[in-house]
Image (cartoon, rainbow, N blue to C red; front, side, top):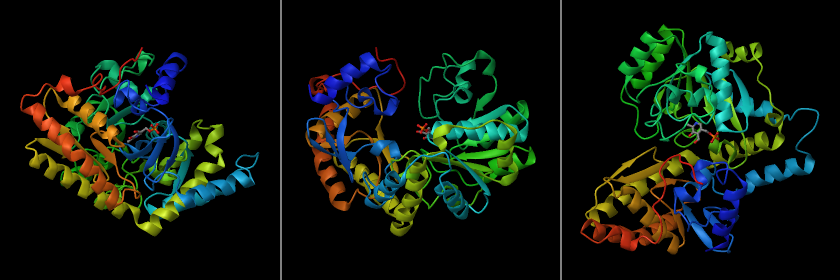
Length: 434
Ligand SMILES: Cc1ncc(COP(=O)(O)O)c(C=O)c1O
């Protein structure tokens, strides 16, 4: 057992659930064998606690580091802030500049608020939108964080959120009285949303612009029209989609503007900063309710975001990661065809993934992680592409993946999967660890 797994065993005794983010639990990748902790990260490379260098072809900080780990210019901007002082009784001037910058990128918006995590930015957006619309009812499509307002969706039906990224989300501890306030709708199903709006007093629609599949022609336009006709505040949650396929929200690509948008993840290239932007008439409702928090004023986040936006613009990073992601997707398809394997690919080009069908799918995923780790890769079945994923890196990854697909083909042809798995199969959703 490596040092990382030893530390993870200690962590599970002292931190409830082991860590603070489900997606970084070793059990989500390779139970008992995943390196679990890092000592250093640079570009698309990560060093574990045993000093082993690994190439990250997995979740890249769960989508935070679109420009790679330890980006020189972003880190330099942060160092300047650390040297000058990152906190004081007075406010950070960078936050005003960041508000103006995000509004320049999204001319439909007029005002901003900042937070430090995607979930809390979503909670801020929901509070403002409910205050603006004067109605409690929210229709949602997608994943929007851990807060009470969102998990309340599962109070009426424990599986209501299963089709929205994370299955098995348990609303224990969420007040039962919040039941019947949030209604999930299926992506690309405008009729479903229209029915919900007809049946409930919906004041807010919150959705991811796209995640697994692209919007059907007219879908986003239909949502916009429905919101307009019913005086509903439309929020696009761009925490994950933002900056991956356009310079700003993915909605820019589709020409449909919301009333509010939420950004997170890539905005600070690894530093904690998230944003809510919106039309002034909606955003001003923030002044009719209490939304306030100490660390939302911290200076590193806004300074990092400004430097990240500059670097993204200089590189046209959204085009770069989209092209790399498309190449990875088509090479997965070609490799699967070479080995006679059936896979389906999905996701934004720069957040691409593939899946096997059938009961062995989790075992195959685990096998990929196990074998790729031996070759020096952090890998599963999806990749958050960064600008550090150069052609050479991608070539090396496919060289290593080729024999693993070969092994899976052998299993498809009768070899016992359990005989090649060296530990337990990975988890695929939320579950208790110990
Ligand atoms: C679309 C979307 N919204 C909200 C969140 C929550 O963000 P955070 O984990 O920073 O709280 C995520 C995180 O995966 C997300 O993908």
